[in-house]
Amino acid sequence: QRSPSTSLMALDRVRLLRIEELAHEVLQSQEELVNLDRQKNGLREALGAFRRNEAPARNSQWVATSGQFLRLPGKTARTWLTEQQEETDRRIAAGRQRLKAQMQALLAEHPQVTDLPPGVCELLLTEQRSQAKAAPKPQAPKQAAKRNALDYSRFDGIVDSDSEEEA
Image 1 (cartoon, rainbow, N blue to C red):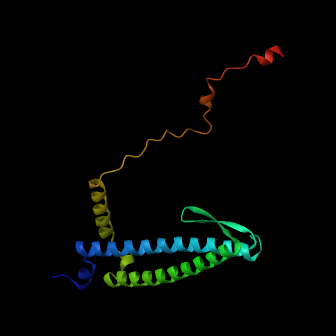
Image 2: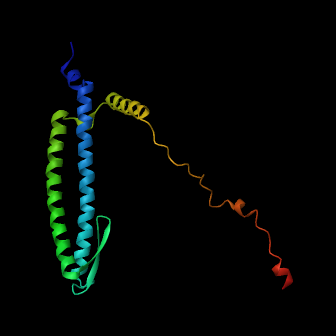
Image 3: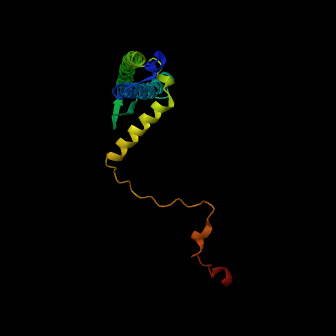
């Protein structure tokens, strides 16, 4: 017969995989929020340039978006940036709500998610390593060995110039 504390600590493989999946979703959502925050800061800086008159609205401005450069009239660029900022704010708000729901699901599945015993962590790592070994590895290009910055042997083949002796 298991004690209540032992039964709480016992996590079967299916539940562990579910916890890992939920934690992965949380991390992805956090990464997406960080990227959206970077985008929002870039838009804020661009709108600040218009506000400070560093990018006059009367001139056409270059705008980089989705891997393209566009030259837009200043007023159109400012309007477009404002719309993009509002859209980014909406996406951030939705992402925060999604992250909150994901965290609640993770905590509902395992309330002590931060208190996983070392054996469970080792089991998860072992599972991850075995999956990594089973997956084919892409061939990485071989890089030349990094040279020591103070290694002057690369200059051994340089010969002295005779031009100084003639002068």
